[in-house]
Image (cartoon, rainbow, N blue to C red; front, side, top):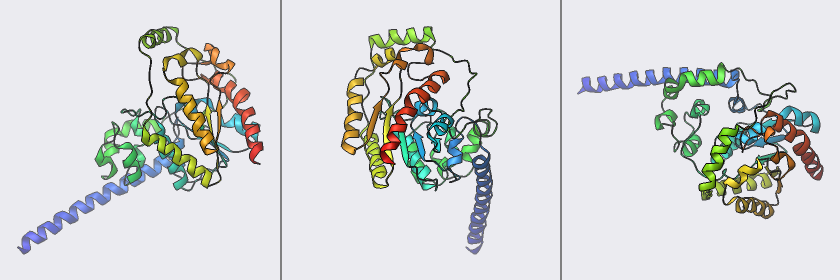
Amino acid sequence: MNQLKNFIKKVILFACTIYGVLLIIDIIITKTIISKAVGYDAEIPEMYTGAIKTDLLIIGTSRAKQHYFSDIIEDSLNIRVYNLGLGAVRFDIVNLLFSKYINKGNQKPKYITLNIECGMLVPINSFYRPWRLHPFLLYDLNMLKYTHKYQGFNIYYYFIPLTRYSTYFDEINNYYLKADKMLYNGSMPYNDTITCKSINTEEFNAEKIKYSKTRIEYIFDTVMVNSLQNLADYCNKNGIHLNLVYSPEYHYGQSFVSNRDSIVTFYKQFCDKNGIEFKDFSQEDICYDSSLFYNVLHLNQCGAQLFTQKYYIPYMKEYIKKYN
Protein backbone atom coordinates (compact mmCIF):
# COMPACT_ATOMS: atom_id res chain seq x y z
CA MET A 1 0.00 0.00 0.00
CA ASN A 2 2.85 2.39 0.88
CA GLN A 3 4.52 1.63 -2.43
CA LEU A 4 1.31 2.51 -4.27
CA LYS A 5 0.99 5.79 -2.35
CA ASN A 6 4.59 6.69 -3.13
CA PHE A 7 4.05 5.87 -6.80
CA ILE A 8 0.95 8.07 -6.94
CA LYS A 9 2.83 10.90 -5.24
CA LYS A 10 5.65 10.62 -7.78
CA VAL A 11 3.19 10.62 -10.69
CA ILE A 12 1.44 13.70 -9.30
CA LEU A 13 4.75 15.46 -8.68
CA PHE A 14 5.94 14.63 -12.20
CA ALA A 15 2.67 15.86 -13.74
CA CYS A 16 2.82 19.07 -11.70
CA THR A 17 6.43 19.63 -12.76
CA ILE A 18 5.57 19.17 -16.43
CA TYR A 19 2.54 21.45 -16.05
CA GLY A 20 4.71 24.08 -14.34
CA VAL A 21 7.30 23.97 -17.12
CA LEU A 22 4.59 24.29 -19.77
CA LEU A 23 3.08 27.22 -17.88
CA ILE A 24 6.41 29.05 -17.65
CA ILE A 25 7.01 28.64 -21.39
CA ASP A 26 3.43 29.76 -22.09
CA ILE A 27 3.88 32.90 -19.98
CA ILE A 28 7.14 33.76 -21.75
CA ILE A 29 5.56 33.42 -25.21
CA THR A 30 2.49 35.44 -24.21
CA LYS A 31 4.55 38.23 -22.66
CA THR A 32 6.70 38.35 -25.79
CA ILE A 33 3.60 38.79 -27.94
CA ILE A 34 2.24 41.50 -25.64
CA SER A 35 5.49 43.47 -25.61
CA LYS A 36 6.57 43.07 -29.25
CA ALA A 37 3.41 42.67 -31.32
CA VAL A 38 3.14 44.44 -34.67
CA GLY A 39 0.69 43.99 -37.49
CA TYR A 40 -2.91 44.68 -38.28
CA ASP A 41 -4.42 43.78 -34.89
CA ALA A 42 -1.50 44.72 -32.64
CA GLU A 43 -3.83 46.85 -30.52
CA ILE A 44 -5.12 43.69 -28.81
CA PRO A 45 -1.75 42.72 -27.27
CA GLU A 46 -1.02 46.40 -26.56
CA MET A 47 -4.27 46.61 -24.63
CA TYR A 48 -2.92 43.95 -22.25
CA THR A 49 0.00 46.21 -21.24
CA GLY A 50 -2.46 48.55 -19.52
CA ALA A 51 -0.49 51.49 -20.91
CA ILE A 52 -2.93 52.94 -23.46
CA LYS A 53 -3.86 56.55 -22.76
CA THR A 54 -6.60 58.05 -24.87
CA ASP A 55 -9.34 60.67 -24.79
CA LEU A 56 -11.37 59.15 -27.62
CA LEU A 57 -11.78 55.40 -28.04
CA ILE A 58 -13.24 54.06 -31.29
CA ILE A 59 -14.77 50.58 -31.03
CA GLY A 60 -16.64 48.27 -33.37
CA THR A 61 -15.90 45.72 -36.07
CA SER A 62 -13.93 46.00 -39.33
CA ARG A 63 -15.76 49.18 -40.31
CA ALA A 64 -14.54 50.83 -37.12
CA LYS A 65 -11.05 49.54 -37.81
CA GLN A 66 -10.90 50.74 -41.42
CA HIS A 67 -13.02 53.91 -41.57
CA TYR A 68 -11.22 56.06 -38.97
CA PHE A 69 -7.66 57.36 -39.05
CA SER A 70 -6.37 57.96 -35.53
CA ASP A 71 -3.53 60.25 -36.60
CA ILE A 72 -5.76 62.53 -38.69
CA ILE A 73 -8.31 62.80 -35.88
CA GLU A 74 -5.61 63.56 -33.30
CA ASP A 75 -4.08 66.32 -35.40
CA SER A 76 -7.45 67.93 -36.07
CA LEU A 77 -9.08 67.63 -32.65
CA ASN A 78 -5.92 67.91 -30.54
CA ILE A 79 -6.90 64.92 -28.42
CA ARG A 80 -5.50 61.43 -28.03
CA VAL A 81 -7.28 58.80 -30.12
CA TYR A 82 -7.15 55.02 -30.07
CA ASN A 83 -8.91 52.56 -32.39
CA LEU A 84 -9.97 49.22 -30.88
CA GLY A 85 -11.95 47.93 -33.87
CA LEU A 86 -11.67 44.24 -34.71
CA GLY A 87 -12.71 42.80 -38.04
CA ALA A 88 -15.28 40.06 -38.70
CA VAL A 89 -16.77 39.88 -35.21
CA ARG A 90 -20.08 40.78 -33.59
CA PHE A 91 -20.93 42.98 -30.65
CA ASP A 92 -20.31 40.26 -28.04
CA ILE A 93 -16.60 40.35 -28.94
CA VAL A 94 -16.57 44.15 -29.33
CA ASN A 95 -17.93 44.48 -25.80
CA LEU A 96 -15.54 41.80 -24.51
CA LEU A 97 -12.55 43.75 -25.84
CA PHE A 98 -13.83 46.96 -24.28
CA SER A 99 -14.21 45.26 -20.90
CA LYS A 100 -10.64 43.95 -21.22
CA TYR A 101 -9.45 47.43 -22.11
CA ILE A 102 -10.95 48.79 -18.87
CA ASN A 103 -10.01 45.84 -16.64
CA LYS A 104 -6.36 45.86 -17.75
CA GLY A 105 -5.93 49.38 -16.40
CA ASN A 106 -5.84 51.41 -19.61
CA GLN A 107 -7.00 54.99 -19.29
CA LYS A 108 -10.74 55.46 -19.19
CA PRO A 109 -11.64 57.58 -22.25
CA LYS A 110 -13.70 60.77 -22.15
CA TYR A 111 -15.47 59.82 -25.38
CA ILE A 112 -16.34 56.56 -27.12
CA THR A 113 -17.51 56.22 -30.70
CA LEU A 114 -19.21 52.90 -31.35
CA ASN A 115 -19.35 52.33 -35.09
CA ILE A 116 -22.55 50.42 -35.71
CA GLU A 117 -23.89 48.41 -38.64
CA CYS A 118 -26.89 46.28 -39.51
CA GLY A 119 -25.40 42.91 -38.61
CA MET A 120 -23.56 43.90 -35.44
CA LEU A 121 -26.15 42.44 -33.03
CA VAL A 122 -26.68 39.25 -35.04
CA PRO A 123 -24.90 36.07 -33.87
CA ILE A 124 -22.53 34.09 -36.10
CA ASN A 125 -20.90 30.67 -35.66
CA SER A 126 -17.57 31.23 -37.34
CA PHE A 127 -14.67 33.30 -36.02
CA TYR A 128 -12.30 34.85 -38.55
CA ARG A 129 -8.66 34.21 -37.61
CA PRO A 130 -9.35 32.90 -34.09
CA TRP A 131 -5.65 33.01 -33.25
CA ARG A 132 -5.99 36.77 -32.86
CA LEU A 133 -7.37 36.07 -29.37
CA HIS A 134 -5.61 32.79 -28.58
CA PRO A 135 -2.66 34.27 -26.63
CA PHE A 136 -5.10 35.71 -24.08
CA LEU A 137 -7.33 32.70 -23.34
CA LEU A 138 -5.45 30.92 -20.56
CA TYR A 139 -7.34 30.96 -17.22
CA ASP A 140 -9.63 33.73 -18.45
CA LEU A 141 -13.20 32.71 -17.63
CA ASN A 142 -14.63 35.81 -19.30
CA MET A 143 -12.90 34.86 -22.53
CA LEU A 144 -14.25 31.35 -22.07
CA LYS A 145 -17.78 32.68 -21.64
CA TYR A 146 -17.80 34.70 -24.85
CA THR A 147 -15.52 32.75 -27.21
CA HIS A 148 -15.86 29.01 -26.51
CA LYS A 149 -18.97 28.76 -28.73
CA TYR A 150 -16.95 29.71 -31.81
CA GLN A 151 -15.00 27.38 -34.06
CA GLY A 152 -11.28 27.47 -33.30
CA PHE A 153 -11.68 27.76 -29.52
CA ASN A 154 -11.22 24.34 -27.91
CA ILE A 155 -11.99 24.04 -24.22
CA TYR A 156 -8.45 22.94 -23.28
CA TYR A 157 -7.01 26.20 -24.69
CA TYR A 158 -8.33 27.93 -21.58
CA PHE A 159 -6.82 25.56 -19.02
CA ILE A 160 -3.81 23.70 -20.43
CA PRO A 161 -0.72 25.82 -21.18
CA LEU A 162 0.76 25.83 -24.70
CA THR A 163 -2.07 23.85 -26.30
CA ARG A 164 -3.30 26.82 -28.33
CA TYR A 165 0.27 27.68 -29.34
CA SER A 166 1.02 24.12 -30.40
CA THR A 167 -2.02 24.21 -32.69
CA TYR A 168 -1.67 27.73 -34.09
CA PHE A 169 1.96 28.72 -33.39
CA ASP A 170 2.82 29.63 -36.99
CA GLU A 171 -0.35 31.68 -37.44
CA ILE A 172 0.14 33.56 -34.16
CA ASN A 173 3.85 34.11 -34.77
CA ASN A 174 3.36 35.36 -38.31
CA TYR A 175 0.37 37.52 -37.41
CA TYR A 176 1.77 39.27 -34.36
CA LEU A 177 5.57 39.04 -34.52
CA LYS A 178 6.48 38.85 -38.22
CA ALA A 179 3.86 41.10 -39.79
CA ASP A 180 4.80 44.06 -41.97
CA LYS A 181 1.90 46.39 -41.32
CA MET A 182 2.44 48.97 -38.61
CA LEU A 183 -0.49 50.75 -37.02
CA TYR A 184 -0.82 54.12 -35.38
CA ASN A 185 -2.96 53.81 -32.26
CA GLY A 186 -4.93 50.92 -33.70
CA SER A 187 -5.53 52.22 -37.23
CA MET A 188 -3.57 52.52 -40.44
CA PRO A 189 -1.58 55.78 -40.60
CA TYR A 190 -2.47 58.50 -43.08
CA ASN A 191 -0.87 58.07 -46.49
CA ASP A 192 -1.34 60.66 -49.25
CA THR A 193 0.31 58.51 -51.93
CA ILE A 194 -1.92 55.42 -51.78
CA THR A 195 -3.63 53.86 -54.77
CA CYS A 196 -7.10 52.76 -53.74
CA LYS A 197 -8.86 49.63 -54.92
CA SER A 198 -12.46 50.24 -55.96
CA ILE A 199 -15.40 47.84 -55.85
CA ASN A 200 -14.87 44.79 -58.01
CA THR A 201 -17.61 45.11 -60.63
CA GLU A 202 -17.87 41.39 -61.30
CA GLU A 203 -18.19 40.51 -57.61
CA PHE A 204 -20.66 43.32 -57.01
CA ASN A 205 -22.86 42.26 -59.92
CA ALA A 206 -22.89 38.70 -58.55
CA GLU A 207 -24.04 40.07 -55.17
CA LYS A 208 -26.76 42.13 -56.85
CA ILE A 209 -28.12 39.02 -58.57
CA LYS A 210 -27.92 36.99 -55.36
CA TYR A 211 -29.68 39.52 -53.12
CA SER A 212 -32.26 40.54 -55.72
CA LYS A 213 -33.65 37.02 -55.29
CA THR A 214 -33.28 36.68 -51.51
CA ARG A 215 -32.58 39.75 -49.42
CA ILE A 216 -30.97 39.47 -45.98
CA GLU A 217 -33.10 39.84 -42.88
CA TYR A 218 -31.15 40.43 -39.69
CA ILE A 219 -32.70 39.22 -36.44
CA PHE A 220 -31.06 40.72 -33.36
CA ASP A 221 -29.82 38.49 -30.55
CA THR A 222 -31.29 39.38 -27.15
CA VAL A 223 -28.00 38.76 -25.34
CA MET A 224 -26.17 41.17 -27.65
CA VAL A 225 -28.88 43.80 -27.29
CA ASN A 226 -28.51 43.48 -23.51
CA SER A 227 -24.74 43.85 -23.87
CA LEU A 228 -25.26 47.05 -25.83
CA GLN A 229 -27.47 48.31 -23.02
CA ASN A 230 -24.78 47.36 -20.50
CA LEU A 231 -22.26 49.43 -22.43
CA ALA A 232 -24.58 52.44 -22.41
CA ASP A 233 -25.22 52.02 -18.68
CA TYR A 234 -21.50 51.74 -17.95
CA CYS A 235 -20.71 54.90 -19.91
CA ASN A 236 -23.52 56.88 -18.29
CA LYS A 237 -22.47 55.72 -14.83
CA ASN A 238 -18.79 56.54 -15.37
CA GLY A 239 -19.15 59.88 -17.11
CA ILE A 240 -18.04 58.62 -20.54
CA HIS A 241 -19.72 60.30 -23.50
CA LEU A 242 -20.81 57.53 -25.86
CA ASN A 243 -22.04 58.14 -29.39
CA LEU A 244 -23.21 55.67 -32.02
CA VAL A 245 -22.01 56.38 -35.54
CA TYR A 246 -23.22 54.67 -38.69
CA SER A 247 -20.31 55.20 -41.08
CA PRO A 248 -20.81 55.16 -44.89
CA GLU A 249 -22.05 52.14 -46.83
CA TYR A 250 -22.29 52.00 -50.60
CA HIS A 251 -25.87 53.06 -51.31
CA TYR A 252 -26.83 50.18 -53.61
CA GLY A 253 -25.68 47.56 -51.13
CA GLN A 254 -28.05 48.96 -48.50
CA SER A 255 -30.95 47.42 -50.45
CA PHE A 256 -29.53 43.96 -49.80
CA VAL A 257 -30.93 44.08 -46.22
CA SER A 258 -34.71 43.79 -46.18
CA ASN A 259 -35.21 45.24 -42.69
CA ARG A 260 -32.50 47.90 -42.78
CA ASP A 261 -34.88 50.77 -42.02
CA SER A 262 -36.18 49.09 -38.88
CA ILE A 263 -32.61 48.38 -37.74
CA VAL A 264 -31.63 52.04 -38.10
CA THR A 265 -34.82 53.00 -36.27
CA PHE A 266 -33.86 50.63 -33.43
CA TYR A 267 -30.50 52.35 -33.04
CA LYS A 268 -32.13 55.79 -33.04
CA GLN A 269 -34.67 54.76 -30.41
CA PHE A 270 -31.96 53.09 -28.32
CA CYS A 271 -29.94 56.31 -28.33
CA ASP A 272 -32.98 58.45 -27.48
CA LYS A 273 -33.81 56.17 -24.55
CA ASN A 274 -30.27 56.34 -23.15
CA GLY A 275 -29.49 59.99 -23.86
CA ILE A 276 -26.87 59.03 -26.43
CA GLU A 277 -26.18 60.85 -29.67
CA PHE A 278 -26.72 58.95 -32.92
CA LYS A 279 -25.10 60.08 -36.16
CA ASP A 280 -25.96 58.42 -39.46
CA PHE A 281 -23.53 59.02 -42.34
CA SER A 282 -24.97 56.24 -44.49
CA GLN A 283 -27.05 58.63 -46.63
CA GLU A 284 -24.32 61.18 -47.37
CA ASP A 285 -22.92 61.91 -50.84
CA ILE A 286 -19.87 59.78 -50.13
CA CYS A 287 -22.14 56.69 -50.18
CA TYR A 288 -22.88 57.19 -53.90
CA ASP A 289 -19.27 57.13 -55.15
CA SER A 290 -18.19 53.56 -55.88
CA SER A 291 -14.55 54.65 -56.33
CA LEU A 292 -14.39 55.24 -52.55
CA PHE A 293 -15.40 51.67 -51.60
CA TYR A 294 -13.67 48.31 -51.99
CA ASN A 295 -16.93 46.48 -51.26
CA VAL A 296 -20.46 47.56 -50.38
CA LEU A 297 -19.73 47.70 -46.65
CA HIS A 298 -16.20 49.08 -46.51
CA LEU A 299 -14.61 52.29 -47.67
CA ASN A 300 -11.21 51.91 -49.25
CA GLN A 301 -8.35 53.97 -47.80
CA CYS A 302 -9.16 56.96 -50.02
CA GLY A 303 -12.77 56.84 -48.89
CA ALA A 304 -11.81 56.34 -45.23
CA GLN A 305 -9.50 59.35 -45.31
CA LEU A 306 -12.23 61.45 -46.91
CA PHE A 307 -14.80 60.25 -44.37
CA THR A 308 -12.47 60.94 -41.46
CA GLN A 309 -11.59 64.45 -42.64
CA LYS A 310 -14.81 65.72 -44.20
CA TYR A 311 -17.49 64.02 -42.11
CA TYR A 312 -16.32 62.52 -38.82
CA ILE A 313 -13.94 65.25 -37.62
CA PRO A 314 -16.39 68.15 -38.12
CA TYR A 315 -19.06 66.12 -36.36
CA MET A 316 -16.77 65.32 -33.43
CA LYS A 317 -15.65 68.94 -33.09
CA GLU A 318 -19.22 69.94 -32.42
CA TYR A 319 -19.83 66.88 -30.27
CA ILE A 320 -16.86 67.59 -28.01
CA LYS A 321 -17.87 71.24 -27.63
CA LYS A 322 -21.11 70.12 -26.02
CA TYR A 323 -19.29 68.35 -23.21
CA ASN A 324 -16.32 70.67 -22.56
